[in-house]
Image (cartoon, rainbow, N blue to C red; front, side, top):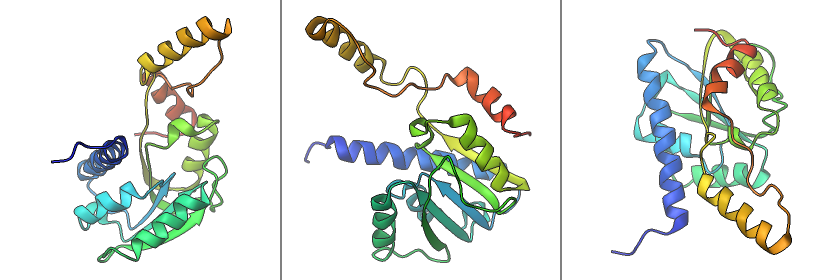
Length: 189
């Protein structure tokens, strides 16, 4: 067997995270016919939904990403794979300025994209605004201690070579702050 490449390991990680996110829908005893995937990337949420047909009662999935190339990839890959009863829609949209009317979606998902957002509190406000009053938001992102070893290695190497340091890895949110960010955006249980 060939060793797994870094790219295939990353794909597997993102698929697993999306699958675990969708597992959480089993804990909610209702259907979510119209769902939004914010920061769809290569379509890992869609792929996870295909492996569990009917998960969460999702009938339509709108995949959005700020990258036109990612949205194009999702559109092109959708045509080569059966989507069953799942209707798929696509839109290039900035995660921080979601172009949807208030109360539009039953469910908003974001899998492994929120750590790229510059204004996470603003993005969460946008998500809350476009959710129906009884809607749900499920998200997964990298947390504070992610990539600590790489961050330290880069800082030490740059300090030695350049006699100074700069940021090479995006700041990560502390998991202890996530509940407060959600509360501030108006999310309630």
